[in-house]
Amino acid sequence: MQQQRQKKIPVRRCVGCNAQKPKRELVRIVRSPDGQISLDLTGKKSGRGAYLCPSAACLAKAQKAHLLERALDQPVPEEVYARLAQQIACAEQQAKEAVDDAQ
Image (cartoon, rainbow, N blue to C red):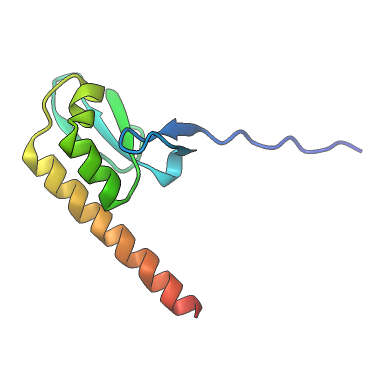
């Protein structure tokens, strides 16, 4: 009888808190080859990427210490930070609703 091999789960490091987590749990920010910085919700855009936990604390730490700029080798526009904050707020709200529904 053959045992099924367990599929390897890709792990990435958050630039804010430096914790290793599964890739799907993190938000990817990508710098495309033409220099545009944007959110990559699919995780498949081409370019240099940086990963961030979906928490306001990690975003604040990354913004204050310019960790995203360092990871992407380019200044990050303020609208990218605003969009990230909005995305994280939605994710935290959904998580809170899921916990409330379970109780």
